[in-house]
Length: 149
Image 1 (spheres, rainbow, N blue to C red):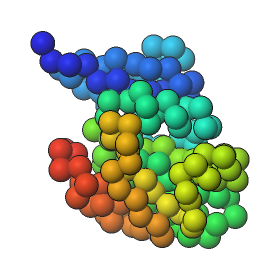
Image 2 (image 1 turned 60 degrees about the vertical axis):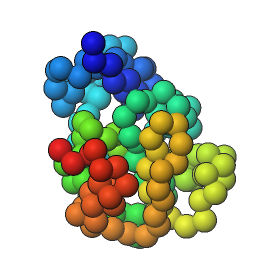
Image 3 (image 1 turned 90 degrees about the horizontal axis):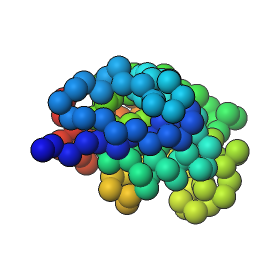
């Protein structure tokens, strides 16, 4: 029997089991009813960020940003476009470094925007600076060859 994927809801933090035989693209959270993959990366708090990293079985990309950061604002539409291409094989979330200073410090964030790719509870790759959607998708796929759908 194929193993189910565990996906954390970016809205409420609920952990959802998704059977691999069914498409996850339109899956909804069993706790709050919101779509798990909307093509619009959610800005999460520290608790939900930690749940994504420690409880999701699929890879997670986090964009660490701040509202005053020009390159972060430039990257936001590209990140959303990349989410539309990578989901549901990869979950993309955002973390506001101003609101979540303790998490940013724990991650050793020195510049923003910074994107970190996590899989299996550990950091797989990290990059800083503004990127286009194509560069984001390529960066993820280069570090996770199985995310080529």
